[in-house]
Amino acid sequence: MGMGGQSYFKVLIVCFVALIASTNAQLQLGFYAESCPKAEKIIADFVHEHIHNAPSLAAALIRMHFHDCFVRGCDASVLLNSTTNQAEKDAPPNLTVRGFDFIDRIKSLVEAECPGVVSCADIIALAARDSIVHTGGPYWKVPTGRRDGVISNKTEATNNIPAPFSNFTTLQTLFANQGLDLKDLVVLSGAHTIGISLCTSFSNRLYNFTGKGDQDPSLDSEYATNLKTFKCKNINDNTTIVEMDPGSRKTFDLGYYRQVVKRRGLFESDAALLTNSVTRSLVNQFLQGSLDTFYAEFAKSIEKMSQIKVKTGTQGEIRKHCAFIRYSNFNHVSLLLFDHGDNFEKSWWWWRAICGLGSLHDVSDDWFQSSIAQIVGNDGDIDFRNETWIGEDSFNTLFPRLYYCVVNLDKLKVVELYDGVSNVWNLQWRRPLLSTSNMQADQGECWSRVHNGYNNGGVSGGGDGRSSNGGDDR
Image (spheres, rainbow, N blue to C red):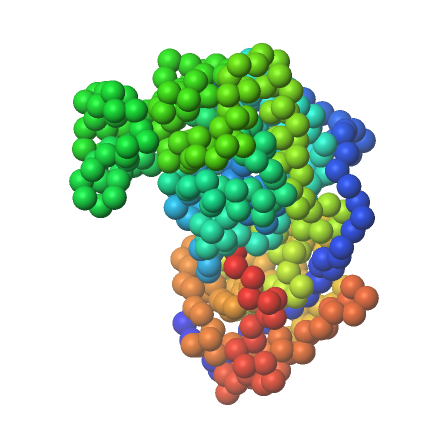
């Protein structure tokens, strides 16, 4: 179905602005005491219910928390799916991160209790803590009030998350970049006591350390032989799982440090702790000290890490779905709804066609209309202050058949929906029906100018009508 020359199309432009401002707000214990008093209990109960059936989940969640905080701070950016840009999830360090579905399930429970209140970033922090506690590990305080980030970038994750093959200098630099010192490095590495790894993360140490088919001399030779004989039988093994603290991976204890001192740490980054006098001394101190001392130090370091570059107040957003940002985050976003004007099927491709917030539904017009209102009209973030119409029909007449496009960063797409089928066009090539080039923000208001470009398919002023949002990767 051609888009040009269709003068009977009706267009609704809903413009909204999110003012992302700096804030002096801080994290605080019990942040949700009034807004969602059951939130922390819901999270703790869910973790407690499932952790016994999946003991490795504690390691997965603490790792997720670590990886999240090392890229743009603890803002749940690690949870975002790739869209037009590759997100952190697709970075090599995160390809083996697990627990996304677990966090999504917690989020759905919390949303059912308090819609739009509790951030995904806080859920990660709380679930990581609760999972360690339920495995018998240390407890630490988790101040809440984090907001969710709106940017997720694969390259940033690759460059900022310590890799298994990192040497001491790299580790020191990456930790220092996050405001963490050498003691934090040694303490947080102790979480490997409950860790597991695929052979691919360290097989080069066994088979091709310097590219000459040799073995890493810093790895205990007997241990290396056992690994090659019983676990990682070839360098290409990408399925076998190995315990980082053999025989003790379900117990949060000092076993990891024993392995490191014996030169049996799986990763080069583990062995790197012995290559510096300060970190080597700290490893020995923890090994010779009490478990309570380690727990206390771990609590200090993890609390410190969990507050790296957090977003609070009006920064960021509170996502409804942890894998997708909300439209209200963009400096300028246009939601354009098109209607062909006849009787149509009541099936359409819900938000997933553009941003993945749902799936294909056969639903009533009333459901779709109320869902639109709930998401973009009635939650305090957005309103329909400025509506520009082409045609004389009211908002309700746009149902049941809808066409919409979203101006989103550097992509302008239209989804044309008919008989339950969706076709996606990038209007950079198909020329948009209208231009949003005149959108601007002033005191929370949003203006949009619609041009009479139906017949000529032209765009004035703004090229392809793409929104200006700084080219942030997500």
